[in-house]
Image (cartoon, rainbow, N blue to C red; front, side):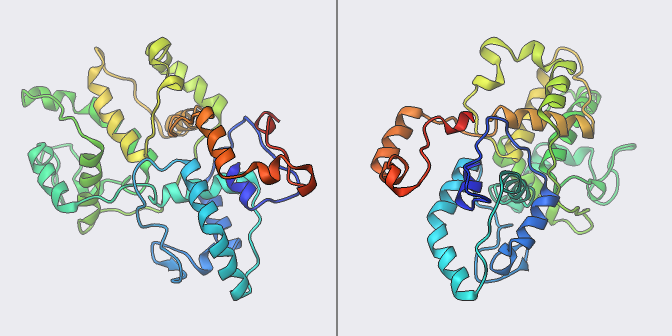
Amino acid sequence: MLLAHLWPAGAGFAATRELLLGDAERGRETFQTQQCIVCHSVGGEGGRTAPDLARAAGRGFAPAEMVSLLWNHAPKMWAAMAKSGIRRPRLNEQQAADLFAFFFAARYFEKPGDARRGETLFEARRCAQCHGLAHPAREGIRPVSEWETMDDPIALAQSMWNHARDMKPAFESLRTVPPRLSPQDFTDLVAYVRSLPGTRQQSPRFAPDSTRNGGEVFAAKGCRSCHNGAWKLEARPTRYSFTEFAAAMWNHAPIFRYDPVRISAQDRRSLVGYLASLQFFEERGNPERGQAVFARKRCATCHDNPATGAPGLAGRAAE
């Protein structure tokens, strides 16, 4: 919503409490039609005068941080666009959500991994005992070259969750327990696997489902039976990238007394849409500190001054 306010589609300030869920494919189209691609590239495709947005910016990147970067970047960007004769983009809220999803899918918000460290971890965590690189190391277990989710962070979370369940007999036969993976471990393992010749590379996708559907899946899969009270996800001060989310899902699965339920591709879309609506992937704000920043940055000079014509902001998020 704030991103759309930087490039408003109309005179009104259309704020809402209902979170709009983005779609990466629509975000890719918006990135092109709004001419962002003239200056910025994504994975080498596009302009060269501005940073490539497929290069990782860091872990735990939230929408609010994206807005702050764009706010700081806007004057320079608008000047460059005017000089090149490019029309300033105008976004509505859905387009802003789609762009954010596109950047997520392009892994812009993931911390870079170390493939060398990932290779060491692949051996040290005993992955290689079951998973061969080009050929199966054990009968019935797919080699790394056949893995299909390296470019989809949401699919990775689903795969890791289901994989932890399937690997339980293998760990029992080896008389060991599943290794815990830190977010950096997981990032490095992914970097290693993606660097291997023959590893399948897919087009990034990020299309969470509706909040309502996600809430139903969250209840049907039994998540709500544990995540209530002090364990309610709405109350947890998290700030996750999707790589961190995948690592958390992997570490979470072995704590179940019984085998955790399987999660389908549609389930993952629904669950992520629901979690996103809870701001689970965002850092919680502090309204008192926000009030101080509002005063210090002199926002009120325009937004509390009827003479400027700028909209007042108090209460607008409830509209």
